[in-house]
Amino acid sequence: MSDIIAAVSTGNQISAIGILRLTGDGCAEVAGKVFTLNSGVPLNQAPARKLMLGTLQDKDGRVIDQCMAVYCRAPHSYTGEDTVELQCHGSPAVLAAGLEALYLAGARPARRGEFTKRAFLNGQLGLTQAEAVIDLIEAETADAAANAAGQVGGVLQKKLSPVYENLTDICSHFHAVLDYPDEDIEDFGLENYEAALKEDAKILYGLSRTYGQGRILRNGVAAAIVGKPNVGKSSLLNALAGYERVIVTEIAGTTRDTVEETVMLGSTRLRLIDTAGIRQTEDRIEAMGVERSRKALEEADLVLFVCDGSQPLTQEDQDVIRQCCDMENAIALINKLDLGKAVVPSDLPFMNVIPICAKTGEGLDLLANLVDDMFANEFPCDGGILSNARQYDAIRRAYEAILRTLHGLKLGLTPDAALTDVEEAMEAMGEVTGATVREDITARIFERFCVGK
Image (cartoon, rainbow, N blue to C red; front, side, top):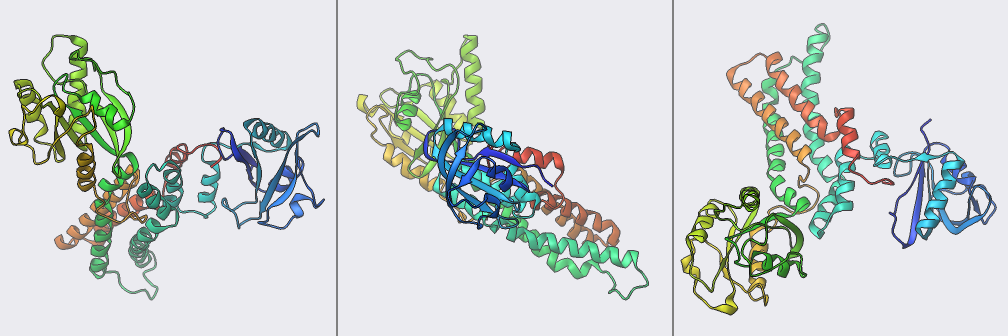
């Protein structure tokens, strides 16, 4: 019999409705000690999956709330166990009092992600579906939400399951022949599985290609704003953020460290990184900021080079330009249009150059359109995009193991030697599907969740 756990599943903010959730064998009896149905029927005898009005009381019998309850019997619930939800008025005080009453009645506090972990352990969700739950909760764009929702619905699981099953068939056939030589089992020949292995490799390679888009769906585009001091980098960040996020003065070197802000530019989510002006300096603190700026530039998905268009380009500008030219995605912004036009697009060795005025917002619509074009989705956000670094690493290892198997076939390796790579691919795939995932990895996955989910 599993522990009965309880938690607030709707957060701690004031809201119209707040939900207290319990799960575990006997949870209806525990909830029934503090919640009485208006109909007089004991909660554990109430019809399943039906909202019912009643009264929630504390340990002393004092009324906490008039609220609704729904009872779902195993296995027809989110966790696969008996589950009760009390839908209260969304006062944090009401929810805290109700939760305390449930604890005194026999429930224990739920740990982070414990409801979803039980759903996984009870076979209600595959591991890819379970991990997608927190991605859906944390999604900040419609595309990210759509992809996570697709994964919760099993899209990724359905793509991976045939690969894992094929690898299982290969290994089981080999070991059956090896362990039962006297049985009437078809002789094992790994070459008979070559076409299937090639198809498996194709599926895994196709999934791995989606990770670049998936990482951006999940984390946003890391966009480093770079340039020499006092060209308007912080003014640009403030203009895109819509408020005074960074102090702006006419004094060069005001920004001493990288500053981050997440914004929506067009339909693209940007993690803007305002960097210290890149230049040679004897100031030790400023030099540390410059070094961090260079690191941010190297790790960025997008570089926004900013220069002062009202002044001719300087050697400091040229030094920064050289560092930007090696970046795959770079846009040059000629700022301060309102002060003059000493720099024209042809002066800059960038494919994409946009004159702007961060102060007035001129040109920022063109920047939004260009960024949307640069980071347009290559793959549909239907749940088949990898956005999880752990999953990507496991699929990459499985793909490489299958390639080694195919290479071993060409070299004429014995089946037992080639099968070690098939088993390694299975192990890696199992980390994604949940078939072979270790307890410590499982614990780490569900620690990402909030309490109550």
